Image 1 (tube, rainbow, N blue to C red):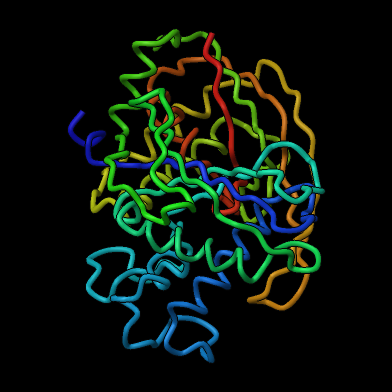
Image 2 (cartoon, rainbow, N blue to C red):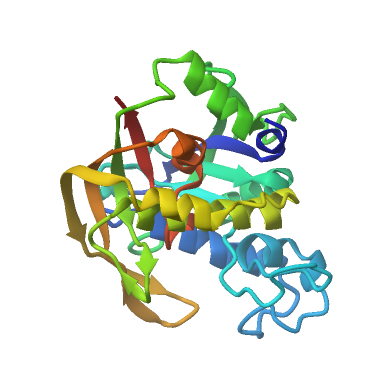
Length: 325
């Protein structure tokens, strides 16, 4: 459990209250993430004329560069040329498709921070407060960041750490580890020698395999994406090289079969301010049940419930829940 102890996460529920009627798209993750990114850059970047953080002298010391434009540090020992490094945060939007929020009708979403990013919580608070002044959604309607609540798996009771009344962040320890996630599952109703597992993909999931996005979530495809994401999150944000034997796990994963499939492809669009164009981002949602020797994969699948998997995880894509039988 030594490695499991070193992978740390924190989860918070942000509650916002519109100052005026707010209109958002059915899938709100992109709007929240996009608004956060543009506002974060405005309040933290010293050279907004640059199209990216590459070449900036302050890149290794900049909060925006680390959180939102993550790249290997100049002194990184491995993976120096890796471009697609996962960002250390995830915004989990509401799962309903409600689009209109009346004045004084609250809306909440989850923020998950991973590893070193946990110490950057105040940046998220300041940014979402400022985003409230700038406005989001159709017509850029304003809102107030009303509350922030911790939702650690170690404490089932929600704890208020911020409210707009006193405008102070309480310094309460809310971190939990990969080991805690596993221990919590063992002590609960989940079995660790299952015959079947069902993954319920709650948000569109985009997994690329052999240069194509897949619509059929074969187990080995899911595991490839999950192991790659977890390994990179651990190395770049928790300072831990997991040393995963990818070949072993992939060989074992190919033996796992789909028992039941109830997934469908969902397309949706978002506007990218960085690329200045609308982008179509489809993914599969629904349930898939797998059968086979699943025990070796459970620690990764349990962590994946919190880290998500595939493309677009920062705005909530690739979010699943696991049921063990």
